Image 1 (cartoon, one colour):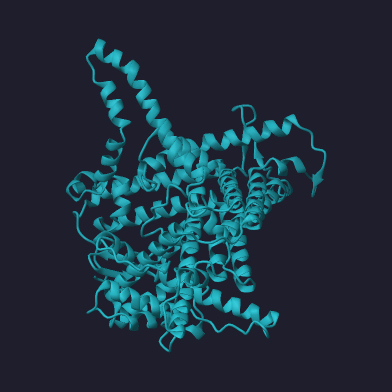
Image 2 (tube, rainbow, N blue to C red):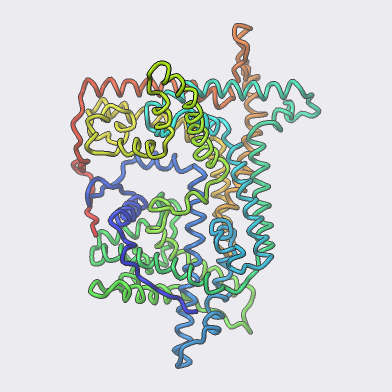
Amino acid sequence: MALQITASANLITPALDRGMKNNIARKSGNKHVSGDTYKKRTAWKKICDFVGSTRAINVVGKAHFESKQYCEAAILRKDFQATQKSVGLGRDLTDEEYNDTVWNSDGVQNRLMREDYIRYSPNYYNKENGTTSRNLWAHRFSKVSHVLHGMCEMNAAPTGMTYNTMRNTGTSGVDEKSTKNKILMFGLLGFIGVGTTELLKCIRSASENTATFLGQGILGLLIAFPIASSALGFLGFCGGMASQIAVQKHKVNPKQQKNLSKDVSENLQKILSQLKSIKDKPELVKVMAQAMQGKHHILKKIKTDSLDDHGIPHILNNALSAIDPAKSDLENMHSLKTALGEYLQVDKPPSESATLWARYRYAKAVTTKESHYVALASTIDHMEVANPHAKAMKDARRQTEEILAPAIHNFALKTLAYPAALLDRVANTNIAPTLRKWASEDYQKAQIKKMNDPSRASKNCFKGEYMAKNIHQYGPVTRACIKIAEGMRLFNMNVVLASNANLSRIFNNMALFINNSVGTSPASRSMCNSLGRFFGGAVLAIIFGTFIPIAADASGSPSTVSTNGNFPVDFSMTNIGILMFLLSAPTLMVQGLAHLAARIEGWNGNINKTVPHGVPAFKFSR
């Protein structure tokens, strides 16, 4: 069955269009101000975004969307070849000929067999789609690897996971920027830190060290949480490898072809909607080009030889030239399909005379061209725009924090409603209905909506969450305090508490860079993340279990501060939870000063953001 391109009248909603424009602005180093106005992001905002991007959900999201987009690129490339073959024959290809040229070709099959696609597009690899036995096993191995990834994340940040789980179990709908969250950080992290310290201390005291490393007992290294995350990261990588060994090529059936055609059509329509917005507008074309290069612009996604004299990618120029605003969306989508398919072509060396080096260079060139399509598609098909598969992509840690903990919270409230009903009858109170209301999903959603309701702005204006999200509505002292408090919270949560994640991020990026530089296929983000966790956890375990105790003891400052019996525990200065407790105190204090300053300076009203004088800005409308 040939690739079916269809246009949906209801796909591009105002909300989706704004989300895509916001994502293009974000990736190009800009931000939404209000209405159609955008401006350059400040250095402070860029730092906050960079620090906040350490979270594993970002890796998972990129793996899902990129794997789908690489499949689309391969399909467009092969579809163009099928069209050329049809022209050469002077007739339409039969279904069998088209399937062999496109769906069942090596180019498309290689992208469908990538580990990221197997893991995050599970509907493709199931019995209903006639998947082979080996491919079903590949999917099972991939699922096991995903479970191990979740367990790795749980051990990589046990303090943060324990805090988030306790917070979400005890209360619902707590925004991370809220004052309530900062109070809970101050109140809980100290207990969590002491608890983990005492747990490790009990395990150490119950076992004798049989070996040492650099003069330190090796048991302290082996029972550390980072070494557990390291081991699970390695097992997760092995699970991904097993999946890749098991997977095999199989003929794409009509149902799968229909679903893949739907993915291609939706992204072509999304790309078209934004190309129509920027066509014949050089400033917006430049913004789009910057977005295609990536958010941080450190390693360019598209090299200089694929750019014109103005730094605009050739693929973007070709796509813009292909569309005509006077034509219908469907006509433009077909033109766009042809233009992109033609751009993705690479001259293949003759099979009878191709050397190994020539085949390697061909495979690298194909991957490079396809990565340009991914750079274009990622501006409109991204987890920051819409993520319909968000629930399916949650790992064990996310399921614990965001599904299990709130479920326990609601169950506890509903259970307490039964004895409360008896008290209501005796004391003529109304406690039981209130508890059931608090446990209601509709009530919880309504509470979240209240914070974003413009008509309630005057009631929310002195709440920490509202203040952090509408900082422009307050005086200079209040704004300064909010920025300092939020900066300290981000540092605590994404630097101190995420020491394992940040160290693993370095090895993760190294694995991605090496694979993309040397390999012929796009790097698997999920497997590179597992490798990053393996090396990052191992290095952190050595640092915490060996070098910090050595440095502390050598300096005359023991790594553990004893309370001399006045308190029945010792405070390990290498414990992240205790360190977080100490850092959360000034965070809460500055947040309190922000509230005080807001009361003194006052609230300026529910005014829209404006562009400061001298800051570059532009309009980006439909």
